[in-house]
Amino acid sequence: MPAAPARPPAPHPRRSRLVPLIAFVSPKGGVGKTTIAANVAALLAARGHEVLSLDLDPQNALRVHLGMPVRDEAGFLAEIGSGTAWRAAVRHTPYGVDLLPHGEVEPRRALELARLVMDRPEVLAEPVREMLADPHRLLIVDSPPGPSPALSAIMPLIDLSVVVLLPDGGSASLIPQIADGRFLGRGTLALRAAERALLVLNQVDLESPLSTAVLDCAQAVMGARLVGVVARDSGVAEALADRRLPVEIPGSRAAEDLSLLTEGILGRLTLPPAMSAGGHSVLTHWGLRR
Ligand SMILES: Nc1ncnc2c1ncn2[C@@H]1O[C@H](COP(=O)(O)OP(=O)(O)O)[C@@H](O)[C@H]1O
Ligand SMILES: [Mg+2]
Image (tube, rainbow, N blue to C red; front, side, top):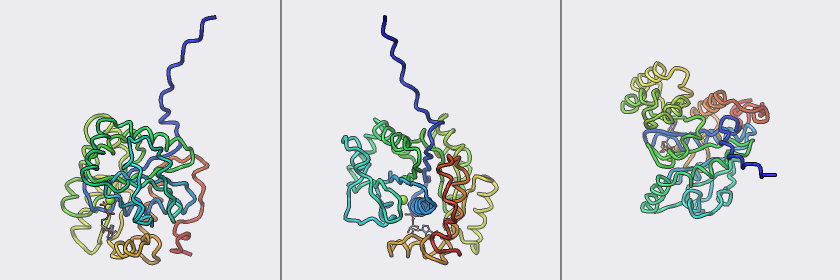
């Protein structure tokens, strides 16, 4: 009897996979991507979700926000292409969030890594697909500012891009590009990713006419895709200096906003029943509310 013809490999079941990938991105640096990614990851873990966070920024700062010792310089992206399994780079943080730090790299090595990922995006896309194969995990990605080979490599896998901007004049001019997806690049993939892009305005000060003008603009252009607004709060930088997260600090103005943002993000995801548990309020967990 002739052997049955080999089946072609099944296409990657993108739509049917359960694990959402949420990427914090921005055309700009210094806008609060890492701060917000760390706090949202910790709040999701506090709600009972299994969270894996992945730092794609050579600044390697996510680990600091998540309370890891700075002497541990190892990381996932720094080792990419070397054949090391990504699981070996996972760190368990005090916030219950698993972390794949970027790893410390010299500027020259950062450029080499960018070139490697640009030439062979699969070296990053393949392990990220493996991370997404675990049905109970949420994947949170922190990214470098602007376009990057690493972000391009995982673009087709992103379920939600959360774009972070400050309420300043420069950012206001970028909001239309966020709404129509131009900032994510050209082509159908970028357009598709743009449809799933949400906006967060960080460091908003309602006493400042510029802040409120940019907030009005964001609400008008983005509508319901403005998923959160985080107050400017000097406690945010102070918390980092104390190696704590702002959401741990009772009474912090930013903490309440970060909690609402987390709930807004969760509300945009279709989670399987096993992941929609965690009935208690994140604010209760952090002692911010009765
Ligand atoms: N809501 C906020 N209020 C005050 N300072 C903030 C706030 N969010 C972030 N910061 C500060 O802004 C700076 C940049 O934040 P960071 O998260 O490193 O930005 P990015 O990752 O976009 O470069 C840090 O010093 C951080 O403490
Ligand atoms: Mg950052």
